[in-house]
Image 1: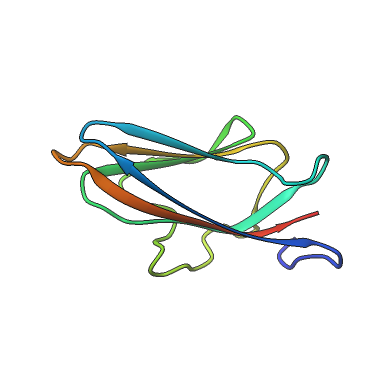
Image 2: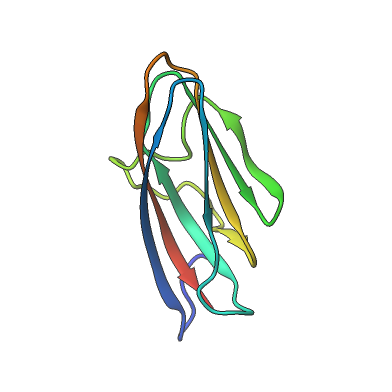
Length: 113
């Protein structure tokens, strides 16, 4: 599925987190409506040096730990084709290996039905 079906609810969630030096943050997104499925073509996270990024959907790693995010919030381009799909939980995991705290903005864009 690459386009939202009729009756789908748009999703555009924005979060921000400060990760201390050598720290880790896990940001969780869940469907708003019970029994629905999320489709996310865009998962954007601020790109910073000394950082690794990982995406886990329903307990399955869908974007393995990497030095670059799926896409950057400045680009906000589609990074999953077909869109990443999950029913219960999406986790964005950020590890800051830099020697200072860093602030990360995150956006997930898609739909649920």
